[in-house]
Image (cartoon, rainbow, N blue to C red; front, top):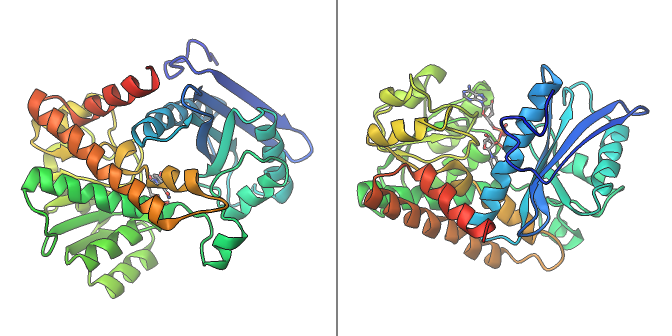
Length: 349
Ligand code: NAD
């Protein structure tokens, strides 16, 4: 398994592997860049089929965090970690504490937070061993009913970004009657659905998990649709909020919406799908720009957390996307390419 010559290596500053015999922890931390600050990124726990698959995932995710933090205007670099294991069967307090010690061994070059397969209680266990954690509310925030879960901020950021995309593609500010198809109504998709419902949008939803669909139908009057049909509905906006690689060679030509704006990471199956999306006349809000609300929230988490300050920062997601759309219209280049170039100009400066 190569590291330096790995196709996703992309000049990573640091890649660390760790095995803790006592707890059974097997984990990788990747720090892509600390030019703007410590590498901030979640810890994903996943039953990877191989070590190579885990390495590829952590390198791609870590690189993405550098771009995300730069365009979100945060003094933070990009990093990510993965634990090889099934979060439903292999998790234990000892494993999470061992992960905390692994994070600590990087002396603050990497700051850990939640990701798929890890949640606030896991990060609390890590925090027993290291100060280098994000995504945890302090006592005052907990008393105010917050947990440190970044999903509400991610959902609000996606809502703000979706509004910017609708303004750019459809020339409208009012979301009343806007038709939106949401793929995945989990932590972020459900909250996005609520924002949209409150703004008067009409919703179509799907999810692997039937109770999640039922909740959106009951609370927001959404229409439930089959999983394989959601991307091809005759709506204004398609909001992928479940899994990655949704936008591929087969599905892109089937999309009837004019706007793609959702929370899922790595929505483009391949880099060239960005051009396909453009050629098909779709306005795509680059995933790492529109879903940056979570790291913005994590950045401010801790003593003195001020919701108004966080919300003001989340509004900048809309401003940044408007700039990306304007440049894309002017140059006829894919929005993802424009976003990458803007991020590189910031973190390579
Ligand atoms: P989640 O697990 O709470 O929700 C995802 C939902 O998608 C689940 O309800 C799941 O059942 C459903 N799902 C999975 N596969 C599906 C499929 N094929 N078709 C339809 N539904 C399917 O996760 P989340 O925290 O809401 O995150 C959603 C996406 O947003 C992920 O891609 C995540 O990486 C990304 N994201 C989340 C955050 C955050 O703050 N939570 C931040 C940035 C990006």
